Image 1 (cartoon, rainbow, N blue to C red):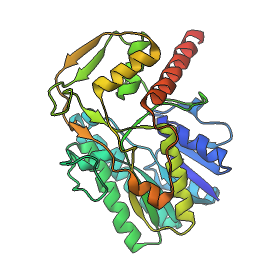
Image 2 (tube, helix red, strand yellow):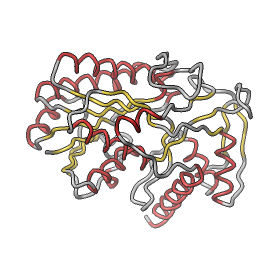
Image 3 (cartoon, rainbow, N blue to C red):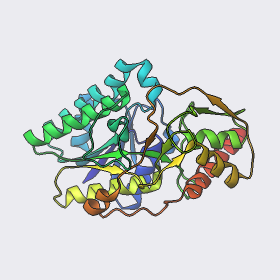
Image 4 (cartoon, rainbow, N blue to C red):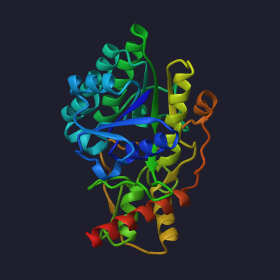
Amino acid sequence: MGVLVTGGAGFIGSHMVLELLGAGEDVVVLDNLSTGFRWAVPDEAKFVEGDVGDQDLVSRLFLSNSIDAIIHFAGSVVVPDSVADPLGYYLNNTSKSRSLVASAVEIKVPHFIFSSTAAVYGMPKENPVGEDARLEPISPYGTSKLMTELMLRDTARAHDLRYVALRYFNVAGADPLGRSGQSTARATHLIKVASEAALGERPYLEVFGTDYPTPDGTCIRDYIHVSDLVRAHLDALRYLRAGGESEVLNCGYGSGFSVRDVIKSVKQVSQRDFPVRLAPRRPGDPAAIVAGAERIGQVLGWKPRLNDLDTIVGHALAWEQRLIEYRAAS
């Protein structure tokens, strides 16, 4: 049987493809290359350029490749952009996910793993935040993802479909072997942006908000290494194939670091200084959000291997250096 990876040419999706291939899975990647890269998909995977909202195309892929599982990454992920363009986010993250789920029901694909987000919690009253916390997203991005979670819940009750929705906290780092990393232009991930500043690819780093109710005034986040994250997806796939029931699980480490902590780590690991500018808060950013991370281990048996901020930063810096060398050679 095969696995369809939507958005498999993007940052997280390309790491997922590597993990699946390493586990001996047959992999089909569907990506419209709006933010992903064809070169990020290994030759061992079948690549199809197309849109996840194209139900005819998706149904043909299911039938021609004996797909028994979907891992759905395709979508838009920048919180401030979602505030400026809510309808675009509801189209990409909700409407097109609805089309994908409908195709899965029609063709009877039984297993679905969904890339959700901690943004569904909004501004949690307590940290770490568990899966049973109130769901009060404060951005269209978070709401668009929550709507897809609800669609999956209701569809699984009505049809022969079981799913795992993984609520990501802040994904960072890069493949330790240097095969993939965050390569999207205008990426807003803090560790990537700070790595670019350390390597001279940006003139400075902006800190958005220094008056949050946190120990140093900057936002606190739970940073999870992308390789640990995709291993959680592989664990979820095995769980579903073994007959596991539908689940919604946090994907994080259960510890948080502030923006200033990250800047300090990047400077230490890179052994380079860079200018930092203070800027106003961005809309849609909670002061702090840290995963309640116990349940994912209990349900999936998942255990993090790269739970160290300096390690995450080191892999991100190494990937950024590779991108610089690639651009210089091309």
